[in-house]
Length: 101
Image (cartoon, rainbow, N blue to C red):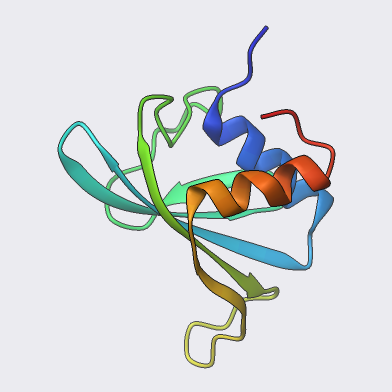
C-alpha cells in the first residue's frame, strides 16, 4: 500500500516529537496551513474531519513550504528550527529519516 503525503509527514512527526510541522499547501484551488504534531494533523484554516483515517492533506496537494518549530509550541512566542523549507528540501529530510517518499 502506498502511503500518502499526509501519512508520511505524520510519520516524520512521530520520529521527531520535539518538532511541530506547519505545512502550507494548495489543494483544489484553495490554500491551507496544516499543523502536524506527534502523528496528528489539523488544518488551521478549514474544518478538519473527525475521521482520523481521512487525510488532512490530499495526495494531489501542492506543498508550498514547511516550517519546523520547537515543541511544545507556544503561539505567543514561537521558536522556529527552520522556516520556508521547499517540498523538495523536506522530502530529502524525510528520506534521511528513513521515511520512504
